[in-house]
Amino acid sequence: MTSLHTTSVRRRRLGVAAAAAGLFATLLTAGPAAATPDPGDTATTRGGVSVSEQAEARAAIKSGDIPGVDEIVHSDNIEHLTNIPKDALQGLNTDLAFQGRYAYAGNYDGFRIFDISNPKQPRTVAQVLCPGSQNDISVSGNLLFLSTDSSRSDNSCTSTTQPATEKSSWEGMKVFDISDKRNPKYVAAVETACGSHTHTIIPERKDVYVYVSSYSPNATFPDCQPPHDGISVIKVPRKAPGNARIVSFPVLFPDGGNPGAPDNPGVSKTTGCHDITVLPSKDLAAGACMGDGLLFSIKDPENPKIIDRVQDNVNFAFWHSASFNQDADKVVFTDELGGGGAATCNDEIGPNRGADGIYDITGKGDKRKLVFRSYFKIDRPQADTEVCVAHNGSLIPVKGRDLMVQAWYQGGISVWDFTDSSKPKEIAYFERGPVSTEAVTTAGPWSAYYYNGYIYSNDIAKGFDVLKLDDRRTDPAKRVRLPELNVQTQPEYFRH
Image (cartoon, rainbow, N blue to C red; front, side):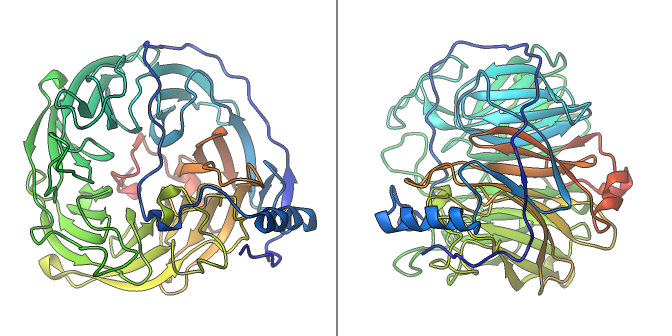
């Protein structure tokens, strides 16, 4: 049942503004990519809503408790600068990466490059058609990395869908040369077991290491056989990316990980990792691995070493992603309850399920422990037709404070403070109203990241959004400038 209480934060209405964008499209001929959300806890996924729930959503809109269909609302300290709709790539928008004046936006059909020199008017520089969900994206120097986690006929950008039961099918990592931003060149591909749902890069001077996260093995899949209890590690030479290869497959769960149901009902069985965040300056990594959360050392990047492992078999269904705070004494893990396909921000689910879990890191060295402190979940009312889930976010770099911006699909974008890890609180927000009041729909921000003074978001359905945040608590971050940002490769913000 949807919560209909009035939010305590005053909303200010704002129409959608679309900026004109110059277009140079690099379109490689290819078929459409399969568009499916992450497979989390599907028990709560619903294809439709009841007549009474539809009526309740319409009544909530009429009373002003939730925004109208596609209506934009936000807190007073956020300004919506612009929206750039989808263009040649019509698949689901996914993750973001940044480099200098460029933003790189993943899409199930490929990727798009924006010039963000003027954040109020981003310009499209290139669109590359290369289907293969999710097209999780990272950049380092002149290299761009793209994940493929849907079974394809081959490793080309003209591939078509093909069953994973066929030995010739391909999934894995693709590498592009982006020295010419207007004309990216596809230079390498590495097939990985069970594909590449997401990936994380560890940039070094001569090489780039890539941690490939994948899961859900099946005895009928020749290239994704159980058990699959680790990650693929790829080494990519910067000067010869065509020589990229797998150098190790560290097993992170020698005991098989969380068994899931029936031992732990409602919890995903661990068969690999969904996402890994590394903190190279501290030789640390945090892994969100389906039914488990990990803390591990990456001092030897080819052979990571587990430091601690935690589970939450009461409120977490699917450990989705992780973020360190700047001091590396906290980790925020997200729970992708519903797999990105269900309405989970309502009274029925409650405040602790489908939330962020905040953990303190205590102790030193190999004796460090992850200690649970609290949950954080947006409390703004959402309709039962709105897919709402804790998703990708980044730190907002302010010394002495732990601040984060985070995407929540149709729950919008939340800026929150977890300086006191036991008492997190939201300090700003931006969201659109439901896409529909008649059916459950997947839309809203996939990623929301803070980069060089602005918040950038890749909305699954609506396109690329730019927001400006003006708040005395976050304003010091405007002075921090980064040459590059891959959020899953957390920088040492105050060294720059």
